[in-house]
Every structure is written in structure tokens, then in C-alpha cells.
Length: 120
Image 1 (cartoon, rainbow, N blue to C red):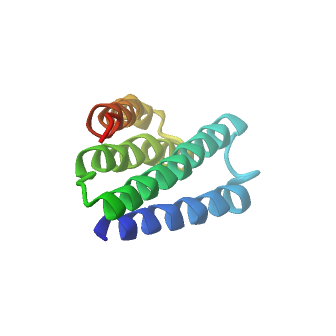
Image 2: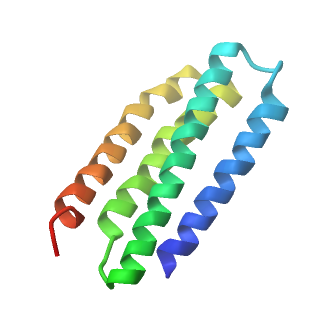
């Protein structure tokens, strides 16, 4: 049940941060930074849905999804978070963090394949 709540919070924040970017940043940050921010929102929301799907699977099958869901959550924080910070502050060095979030996403999806992809 905890992962369902975490997915809800991640989804809520994705929508809120997306609205902030669309209404609060447009015209205030360079287009390149706004594009990076929008990429962060896209990956944030996609992985909120993925975490929710994992949580629902865990609830139905009584299986742990902590490893893949945790990796995806880490990806949201590192990947999307670094893009948000970079766009809002203009400090491009935050972009050095982004690939670590991408790797966390890849680990999460790999764990879905390895741990949940086999036939029951």
C-alpha cells in the first residue's frame, strides 16, 4: 500500500510541477531551459504511472516491487529534479546529475524485466 501512496504523491507533484513550468516559467527562462524542464516533467509523469502500475501489481500478486519502484523513484528525483533545478536556477552544472537519474530509470526497467518478467 505504501507504493500506491508514493505513486500518488509522485503523480501529484508531476502535475503540479508541470503546471508551474507551463504557467510560471514560460517567458521567464530561455526556451532551451524550458524544454529541459518539460523533459523532466515528461519523464516524471511516465514514471509516476509506472510506479503506480508496479504498486498495483504488488498489491494484486502479493509480491515486493521495492527494487524496481525504488530505482524509478530515484530516477525521478535525480533525472527530473536536476532538470527542474537547472531550468529554474540557470545553473547548468545540475545537468551533470541527470545521467545518474537516467541510469536509475534503466535499472528500474531492467529490474521489472528480471524480477517480474518471468512467468508465474
